[in-house]
Image 1 (tube, helix red, strand yellow):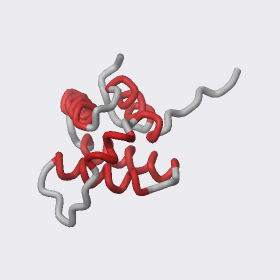
Image 2 (cartoon, one colour):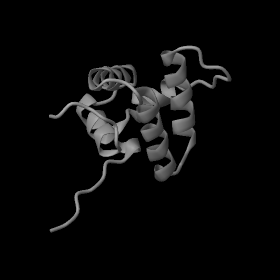
Image 3 (spheres, rainbow, N blue to C red):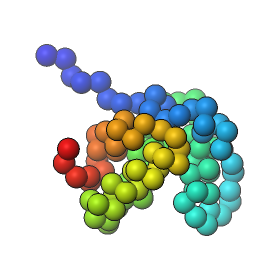
Length: 103
């Protein structure tokens, strides 16, 4: 039986939209600015391992010490803001240790 293939961040996120919203911020003051900064850094990297770490970090940093409901809300918001498939982003987050509801 073969091992299931792990999801890859660059195949989940909407690359064209990330390039469109990417912006560099020295001091991020809100979540939209943080996501624009994330998009800039994400699209500037050519390494899938680095991009996977970046997306994992974004998901974990945003959900650490939060309830599962709050974590679900953040995943929904990030998916909406980055114009990304919510189901795939949620699966990626869960696969990489983000505590989410069952299902």
